[in-house]
Image 1 (spheres, rainbow, N blue to C red):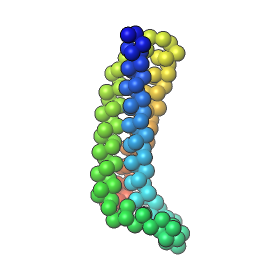
Image 2 (image 1 turned 60 degrees about the vertical axis):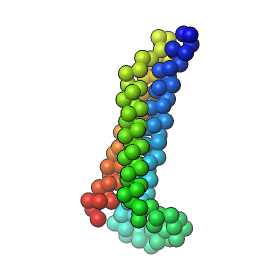
Image 3 (image 1 turned 30 degrees about the vertical axis):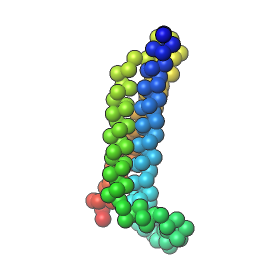
Image 4 (image 1 turned 180 degrees about the horizontal axis):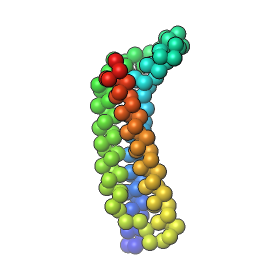
Length: 131
């Protein structure tokens, strides 16, 4: 029974980490959708953007469906935030090595989540404010 109690906090922390990775992946979609084309055009790489769109025509669909892309990204961010919040109060194991691993996993999860939030907000600024 002690074995299950020691594994539960690590499992909760891993859920937070996977949630943060999911949020980072969803926010990368917002960057590809809206930031990449704007930055390429701003830097005078319109021809490179045209060849990129020719090679990957799904970029046009992402740009046309930016409300859907941002809706999914914000939903995944909310889910990841809830998972991290829930993991924040879970106890770490009593073993010092496992406790250190638990805390390191929590810090990495929080960092990934912050990067995902910043990337999504940056994408939203490019998609909706700087249009």
